[in-house]
Image 1 (cartoon, one colour):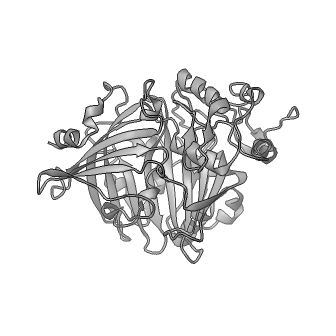
Image 2 (cartoon, rainbow, N blue to C red):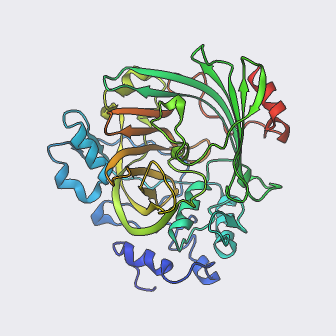
Image 3 (cartoon, rainbow, N blue to C red):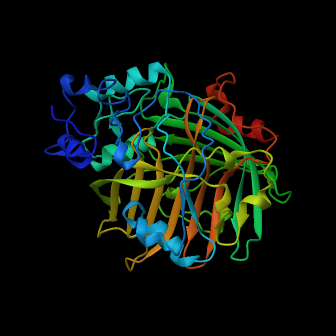
Amino acid sequence: MTDFRPTTLLTFLMFFVTGVEAKVSTEQAARLGQDLTPFGAIKKGDEPAGIPAWQDVKTTDPSEQVLFTITHDNYLQHEKHLTAGQIALFQTHPETFKMSIYPSHRTFAAPDWVYNNSKNNAITAELNPQKTGILNATGGIPFPIPQSALEVYFNHVARWRGVQLINHASDANVAEDGSFQLSSRESLIRYDYYLNDNPNPNRLFSAISKTTAPASRSGTGGLVIEPLDQIDEPRSAWLWDKGRRRVTRAPNFAYDQPISSANALRTADDTDMVNGAPDRFEWQLLEPRTVYIPYNNNRLADTALPYTDILKPGHINPALTRYEKHRVWVIRGTVKSEWRHLYSRRDFYIDEDSWSIAIADQYDKQGQLFRVSMAYLQQDPNMPGTFPVITVFHDLNSRKYHVMGLQNEAPKGNIYDAKLANDNIFTPNGLKRYVK
């Protein structure tokens, strides 16, 4: 394509997604770092639409004034850039839900070695024959020039989030009246896919955690070994039972199994917006869009904010959130006729720069929208890269919601540069030592 215009986003992207799925040519891969960013986004902006060109910077502190605010009174004027889930939130909470729109910043950045691996992956990586995992990809975006919805899916699953993360965070279950219950934890996550010497190419990450509050659950813990292809190798999980003081193997924990600690407001495959095996859904790559997504939510991460200032009836405090217009990939999963799932359909909106899912709209068995999830993204210079400040899961019917990842009152922020954890901690005996 020689006549490239950023406004013809659909034409540009669909150039790569016609025909059969295959590795891209070296000529196509050469565009990474040229007219495409190293992760495959369109480098040019679209000034009339208010979308800037990509900037390879590792920090941002946008302090602009809000451009305008979308409310129930005017959301129809902006519905072209809203998802069905966002519109439903305006309709469900007409007096209180608002979206403050700020100037857009495309400031995603990652280390050079991740960029280089991503470029190599473009000409080597492919979906496995069952389309349940990826082959021949290492330490970068597997499909920076994707040709199918499942390649976009795995770009999110295997996106850059650092090599290791130590995290202190709380999750909240918020009732309709705004009262909430907190559960706090300390976690260690090693992103094995990004290790230089990863001995298992099917290993995505290894994670271990212990609950620190409330007192009734303090001292419990869990261990998860997460494969990329979970049909060939199911997820492995263990729990520390503090009552019996022993580690037990957790049951198969996947798909739409409800999360009890989230009051069933989140399913197992809702975590991280979506995860696990994609085999129970048919996947479509829909027309790309420009959407107001949560982005650069520095203010929401302010450690001076108590949780009572963030958690409000129906939704988090809109005075603390920031939305920007970004180009997004859109993929749709529709449950296969031979399977049953809580969600009959799931629409995901993926930031073109980071491959992070920013919004998920989820439909019930009757085809009615009933859950909306949003990841409030922030550029973390310590990684560097994109990481959600929090992720919010809304149930439109009950008007309750669940929040993952609150850190404002945590003892420490995210730690990315600690000594790399040894394999022996990610074992049942390692879990026993970790929780004590």
